[in-house]
Amino acid sequence: MWRGRALRRGPLLALALVLGALWWWAVLRLALLPEQTGAIEGAVAAGGWGLSLLPVHVISAASAGVTTRASRRRRSGAESDPS
Image (cartoon, rainbow, N blue to C red; front, side, top):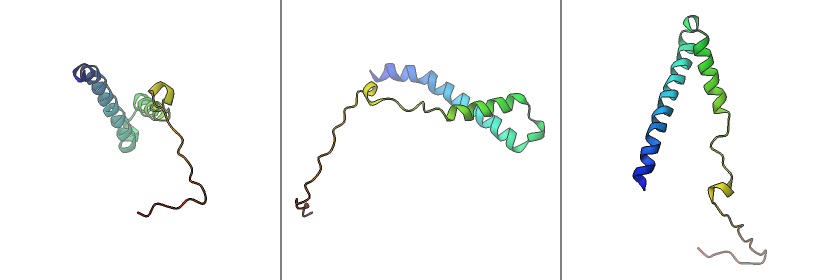
């Protein structure tokens, strides 16, 4: 079961690392050598920054299969735990 997931995640992880390295290269080039950079570096840096604004890590609890329960409120007259 884990082996199948690892095989599917491997190429995605490699792609994410390559794209992240490309973005950092463009950002550092813009910051350190602004007179030698072109439109491609600017587009890569702006595109990566724009993607970082998207909430791609947020999913609904229903699609994740997570169920939650509300915690019970204590009565105002109830004593606290001695510990």
